[in-house]
Length: 61
Image 1 (tube, helix red, strand yellow):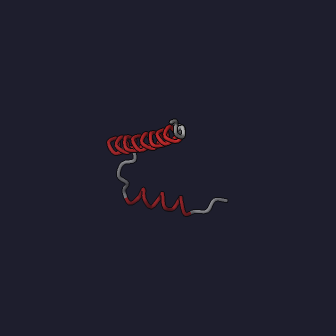
Image 2 (spheres, helix red, strand yellow; image 1 turned 45 degrees about the vertical axis):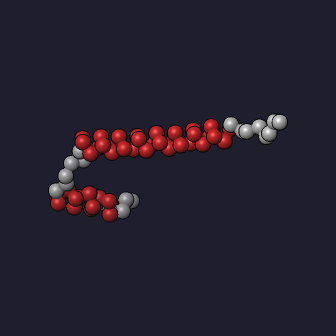
Image 3 (cartoon, helix red, strand yellow; image 1 turned 90 degrees about the vertical axis):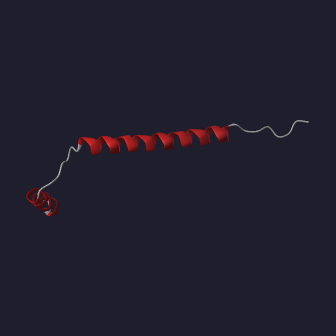
């Protein structure tokens, strides 16, 4: 009595998708931790904030 053969394609694809998503989440977490620990940007004073705001708002010609 042989029933319907079970397809292994769907479980394999599902496992690959979940593994990929898990890998992306882990990369995001490690990147966030590295960025937080390095603090490359640093705190900005008011003069720097005003300058950045002016540069961003000024239309280019």
